[in-house]
Image (tube, each protein chain N blue to C red):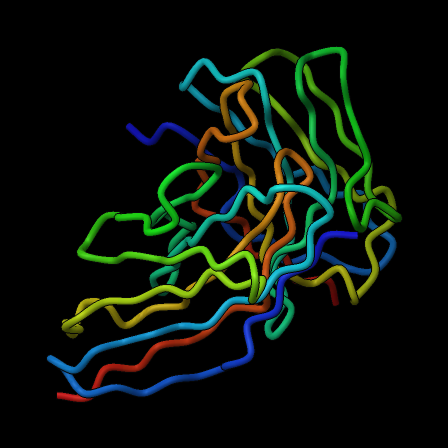
Length: 110
Length: 113
């Protein structure tokens, strides 16, 4: 069965520092992988997705993610975090019947 | 105007009451979904519909039912609400390709007392 693990419940970084959010998945075939962001009181917005091709995927707001099949990972990165990036981030796998991770809450220190 | 709307945005009800949450979309998508979000659990799929005549159970469908009244409308019902159905509920829509993005509504916060 497909599943997603986000090992970090909460991460705090300083503004301007780099960021990496971890995501590990379990999926029987070539996975469709997604990262969504949820700002407080809002719905989810897609940051980026991977389904084939180049394993380094560029998304909106300066985010990128790298698919590593050997590690079953799809980690999200950003080289320099802005205060507006404070939100909850969800990794998801699947197509149609999608599975989400439990989320990682990001706090940005001034 | 928002592409995916949900009504109501907030609802407080009592145990045993029947509740309906409604979702409408103007994106012209065939696929629609209902999720619930609980702290520490992320989003879990309740039901999904690939078109008006195709409805499927998701990960946690027990205690819920759905109705796809039209391409643009997908309703979620709790026939007899219980306190552990207190959660944030999201509707989403997508195109027909499995790689298509899901677009989420703003959510409905439901409290069952």
